Image (cartoon, rainbow, N blue to C red; front, side, top):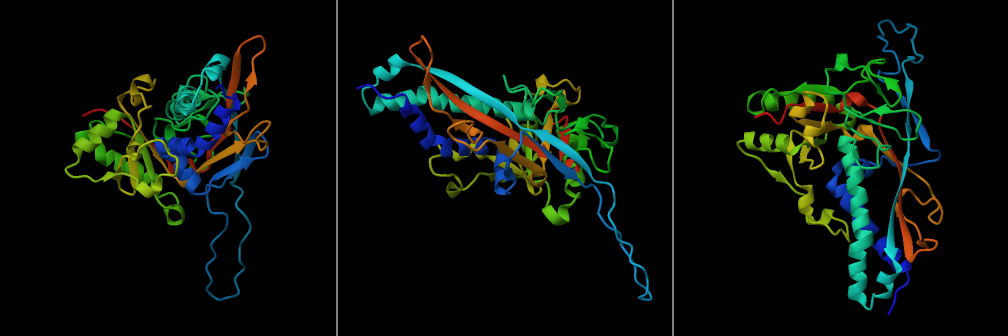
Length: 359
């Protein structure tokens, strides 16, 4: 009994909520942004956003009651910009595989062999691009790694979000705005000489420097990601610690992954996660080669997708298109579409720490 090629798309659409949740489980940065309601739809392939580094008004002291009130607006706001990256993950399924499927078990095997592996491969590529900027074929997508660049629309390379340098020495652009060209447009930074020596002190320094920027309104840094050596050194340096694992009820229905994917450890008010795709040996910066930890204030991060028509350009969120037969071949082509952008509107609330892999 042969099956229609549409069966794989139908099955994948049923599984998508679970697989998309797996992606956020594997990378809590996306999960936190979505939960804060900072995921939106772009009406255009690009977005502009305002950066207001200082208070917009003027404080007035009243003594006699007849003073003039100075108001107005400080002209310190500038606009950053961001572009959605569009990628299509394509894979082919031989018609013979569909002909040979003679029961439910065979269909399950096809799903595991093709759409499931395709989805997970696609998401891991994006994950690697996010933290290292070296996801194969994903060089247009945003990256945290300031050691490299990304190019979302072929309009010119853009530097990754974090510079591994003291705030006052940061000179590259971030989202189209020169660092330090306005107050606070830089990321916080610290360097560890040895985790057992000044490790936790330097991590606290970077964490506190980032968290004090607007903490009254939006809280502290809530996420941290480090290479495995930095993470393990931090754990080993603790005399006592509490492992953090999401409760069973936090995993959405259909999620094919275990909750262990989200294990982390608390650092102040943040959860510090080991990030398997941070390869410290692949950095260029000499200090970053000694270990990298990213500190993310998720309230300052924004995620958006482009596209609305499921039958045409798709919604752009790892969406599956209908299959079509390749001309002159006994193959059906399947496609997964991602059209997504990510940006930060308050750079100084985030930090990078280097050197954590040193004992």
